[in-house]
Image (cartoon, rainbow, N blue to C red; front, side):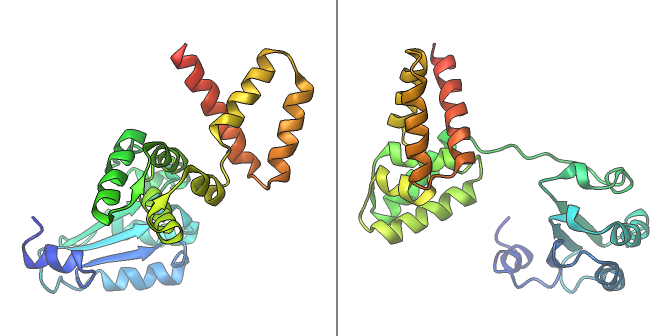
Length: 224
C-alpha cells in the first residue's frame, strides 16, 4: 500500500523484517547456516520475515544443501524470495520447492517514456534519438538506462547530444551501420574492412558493435 509502517520501513531500507542478502558474497555453507539460525526468530513488526537473496545462483552446492531443509519446512512466518538472471544454474531440488515467476525485459518505448519524464523533471534538453540510443543499449534494464542517463546529465549539463551517448557507451553510430550495409549490398568488401578497422581503431567494443549490426539488419528486415 505504501502507507503502512511496514511499507514505509521497507521503502526506507530500515525494516528489520525484510532483509536483502547478496548471494555472491554470502554463498558458502557457513553463511547459509547462520541464515538458518536467524530464520527461527519471529518478525519484530509485521506478519512475516522476508529474506530476499539476490544472485541466488551464486550459492555453492553445499550452501544449497544446507538451505534445503529450511525450504522444506520453513517457519510459518518466513518467506524467501530468490532473484537470479541464471535460473538454469539453480539446482532442481531448490526450483521444485519454489513458485517461479519470470520477469520480462522492459520495451525500448517504455524506457524512452520514462527517460522523457526524467528529462522533463530535470529540465534537460535532449533529443528523442538520444533517448532511443540509451534505451537500446540498456537491453531492457530500466535501472541501467537511468544510470547512464544520470551520468550523461552530469557530464553534459543542459544539452545532451548523440555524440555524447556514442562516446560514453562505445556504440557505433547509425550512419556507420548504414554505410556498412550499403557496401555489403554493392559487394565492396574492401570498404567494409576499412570501416571495420576504423571502428576498431576508435576503441569501440567489438561485441557491442556486432550486436548493433545484428539489430540493424533485423530492423531492416522488419521494415522491408
